[in-house]
Amino acid sequence: MPTEEPTAVVVPGALPVVGHALHLRRRPIPFLTTLPRLGDVVRIRLGRTQVFVPCRSELVQRVLVNDSTFDRGGGPQFERSNEFASGLAGCVHEHHRRQRRLVQPAFRTERLASYGAVVEQELVALTDSWRDGQEFDMFPALLDFTSGVVARVLFSSRAEHAASGEVAHWFAVLMRQGDAGCRGLLTQVASRLAPRTARRRHRPLIDFHQALDQILSDYPRPGENDGHGVGAGCGPRDMFSALALAREKGDGAGLTPQELRSQAITMLAAGVYTPATALTWAFFLMSQYPQCAARLHAEADTVLDGHTARWRDLPSLTYTERFVSETLRLYPPVWMFFRKTTADVSLGGERIPCGATVMVSPLMLHRDEDAFADPFTFDPDRWLPERITAASRRAFTAFGGGPRRCIGDVFGLAELTLTLATVAGQWRLENTSRKRPPAHACPVNLPPRHLPVRLRSRSR
Ligand code: HEM
Image (spheres, protein in one colour):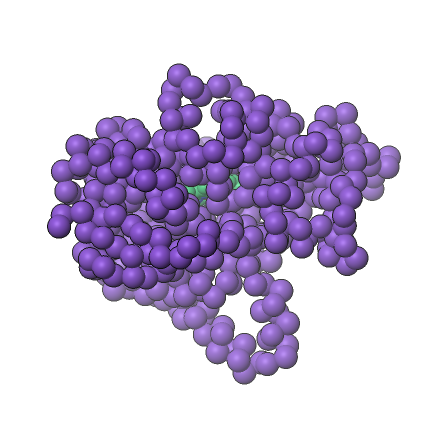
């Protein structure tokens, strides 16, 4: 129970019942960027929940680093699903360190190159299917692409191409349906009103779980001999094998079968929607800034010479990587995330009670003019080493921070860079809509709802 009344300025403009939720959903950028003017820590209301928002990057870093006092919870994302709650992204501090130690080997540098080979194969499939003059909506196409990448990164050593393709397919369908949370409330209401329609709607979820269970049944259970002659430090190259083989140093215990299943779902959820969102914004920005696009084309021509980008090309794709970083700054796909306090705490001189919800918003921090000169301008060169400052480094929270920083950060950044470079090497993209794609604020991600494009081959 809180011992003292909370302080921190209450942000004006809360509506009855929903509080500030509508402002956040409809106009996330103007709403969030005004908050720092009101105080270092402010209070908003999302429905009935009072939410504390630290507005300075130093305070946000304190929240992220102190993960026992600012624990997982408090937000809409992870609490809905038990599958998430027992996986790395959703578990509370008490279980997190152990899970993180067991999951980390799957993201070791030497493994990432083999995941990169999967990205390369999926990129060949994607770009081979494109035709000059073709028009389509980029976001769903990229959801299919990133689903394919993650499903094959997870399961390539055991599952047939078709089997992991099935998992990828159903997962992409679920994502498009909005079961990631975008329409969670609407879905619940609709299922009460029209159960038969809801059952049809849940079909992909059932099919996804069946396809996943089929694949998982092919893997040895923890403790069983893998039959692949796997020893410490080597082993089959897919991510799920690495997770299944991971053991604690002391007692040699690994992840339980339930935890393993949750990790697979966590990786799919974390590794599909977010990179697809980032890529869609990157392609939008490419269509908006011809001079930046020209530099992407030039770098791709020099480094790739018409080929699909490979892992070993990454060190040479320096401008492309800056372009990706700047995209993640202006449109961080995970635009807000939440913590729950486990004790009364003082932050920036304001009292926050135990059990309170705290919101971190990279979208707000990334548009802070103390950290970024001209924060609303798209300028990839602000990420040149000599222009990066301590303040910009601290404010850049697209991958979170502290002990719960994104475990897929290096792989994610590489996937985005390889994809952007490959497309820039072969295609020009014309945005066929005159309108800016509206940012469609979901509880977790900030995807552009649509990005209709026309492809122009660069080899003509
Ligand atoms: C553009 C790419 C990506 C972005 C912007 C991104 C962003 C983030 C952010 C902001 C967090 C921290 C959330 C919090 O602290 O509450 C996070 C955590 C996480 N991400 Fe990512 N992510 C990306 C790609 C990936 C990929 C490709 C994977 C896996 C295949 C992944 C797996 C995870 C996991 C498992 C966590 C939880 C880590 C923990 O709690 O220890 N992410 N991500």
